[in-house]
Image 1 (spheres, rainbow over the protein chains, first blue to last red):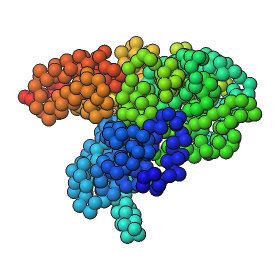
Image 2: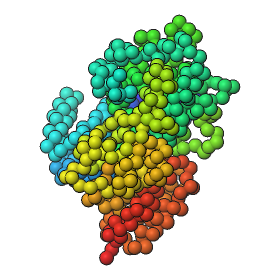
Image 3: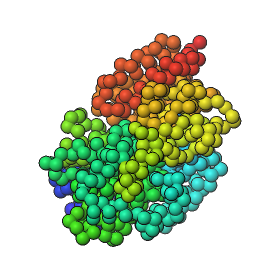
Image 4: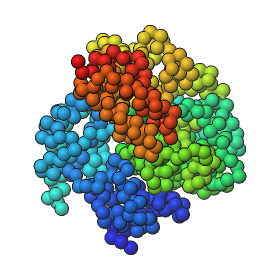
Length: 172
Length: 417
């Protein structure tokens, strides 16, 4: 039993029970989600451990991890601020909103703030077109939507996140 | 009865709780089906209702169910909750606010095709909703509505969620099945079709969330009742997701056959700043662009009329309103970039075609394109059509070709002078 399995044994057992035993590989995305949630990204160790649990190759796991956009293989900011700029959102000012957010945080899309708290990402449709501009915050153990955003609500949001992240850091 | 068949939570409190849902008659249809109806009777009722797939294809649901062979077992039912089409946000409202009606529909679908196991595939961004649905499933197990020997009979049923992780293509049903099996979300070559060889190589029905939410009222009130809504060939109500340049964006549940004008100017409150409507996209980013003239605005929104009168499929009824300040070349750049990002890369026409359409439209909006580039763009799109493994590749060309055909001036206005 590897370290990943030991740490998450109950959850892994419950996940494997969802699928026929001969289709154990079905658990690869749920297990990648565990890794992603625990650390905010999927590490090479996670890939090896998941492969071992499911009796598939590390390459198989890495290919799945690489295909889906919510699995990250590199450490980003503590919070990934993901802003939708697809057509319906763009018609409601999402592109301008993205620019203001980047200016506010002093980064370009894809970059992380120097304090390591925020990575700004431009993403595809989040199924919240009627409440654009919209962003989701992907952090450890969460994906949370924030809708009908303005620069003012965004400022409040990042202050809250910073405070929360800082408190966690000091607690740990 | 209330005006809602699907968005009932808007006038029924606590519908998202099992107690609240049962207090408003929830699970009466499931109990009636399992205790007094044969599976084929449930299937027949849904067939007679004329319910059509609400995910985009508009295929008759009962007929889809009837394709499962009775010699290959087990059967599976998968609910498609991968809602990712730009402009579509109806399933999300149902999942968050009226989850038990959707789950009861899934359970009735399972019973109708004699599946003992069903899955709910949710897009990864619906992480919180997935936890909520897990909670609903646990509540149903505790209440004895899921599990062994339901209502004292022989039927048993379990449901599980499976969370995606960010891939539009997984809304395509065979890519969705690949994803559940732990592979890249890439469509399968058909045949075989999922009805004979789907999930885990077994006969499988895949239905959209909204489709399934229609099933409990159909089983409860009957097919004839359902036909009192909508048109003859497109019966029932539909949730129209209204977005873009519109005063009151949101979900509107209306009978199929409601004209565009009523949705946009009646329910949607018209266009901000009193501007004119230039174009309508009825099926999200996958739309054929509709030139919004009086004829279009008076066209009924149902599966036949929109296609026959305007040459544009209704799809998932995600109506994006585009006002007269928008340049269609810019709009096509947005859709081309979306499809380039979401192409799974399995088949060449889509992988390469979306790449080049994105490239050319980028050049266009940067003012670096020539007139020939507009023709080249059109040429790439038409060469892709009919040559893709799945509908994503086809969809990626729709706004491009219809945009150039109907709004060529907008493209020419962007070329290098």
